[in-house]
Every structure is written in C-alpha cells, then in structure tokens.
Amino acid sequence: MNEMQTPMAEFLRASIAKIKEMVDANTVVGDPVSTPDGVTLVPVSRVSVGFAGGGGDLVKQRDGCVGGSGAGIRIEPIGFLIVKDGSVRMLNIQPPAVTTLDRVIDLVPQLIDRAEAFMDKKCASGGGQPAAQDETPPAGA
Image 1 (cartoon, rainbow, N blue to C red):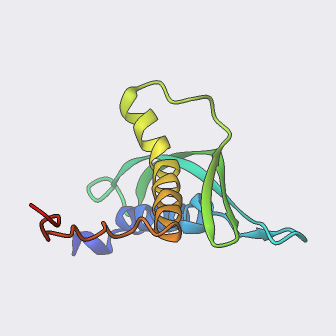
Image 2 (cartoon, rainbow, N blue to C red):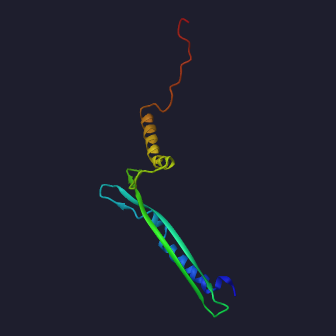
C-alpha cells in the first residue's frame, strides 16, 4: 500500500488544506478602503500559525486509522498603509519597537520620504548641479 494513499495521510492533507484556506495574503494585507477625501487605507496584520497532527494506521489490528490534529491562528493588527497623493506611509498601531533594529526598520519609510523631499527641493532651487568653476586667471595677474 502506498504511504500517500493511507487514510492518515489523507486526513493530514485535508487538515493542512483547511489551514491554507484560512491564512492567505488577504489576511496579512487587507482590502483597501478609500475615503471621500482621496486617502486609501490598507490594513496590515501579523499572522502566526501553529499546527500539530498525528496518528497512525491500524493495519495489524483492523482496517482504519486513528488520528487527530489541532491548529491555532493568531491575527494581530499592526497598522495601516496610508496612500495619499502618490506617497505611502505606514501608521503603526502597536507600541513602539523594543530593539534598535526594529526602530530602524520602522523609520526607513520616513527617511526615504524625507530624502525624496530634500532632493526635490534641492533640484527645484537650482542646486541640483554644482556650478562650473571659471579657471580663467584674473586680469592683470
């Protein structure tokens, strides 16, 4: 008998398929919501999944199988992506990050926005290219 065709294997396959149905990309990044003033909000969640299953086939005693499975899913909202006038910003709804690395990762979108604004401002004021130096010696030298 092929191991993949046993009732226990089919039981575990069905359990895992049900978990896949519950946890998909739409659980992590939700459906966008548009407001009348042109802002789009996209909910973002953290999903944690645990699964355990086991059992056995009762080949020697009688036909059939014995088995069980359990799963736990934790969906934790962490924030919203705010899309307005072509810029995207993350609004966290969790307490501030504890580690330095988490803080740096949280600040990356803000740093990118500030750098883009600085470069746009610099280019608009004519400071985008350095002025060419005139290498002609002064008269009477």
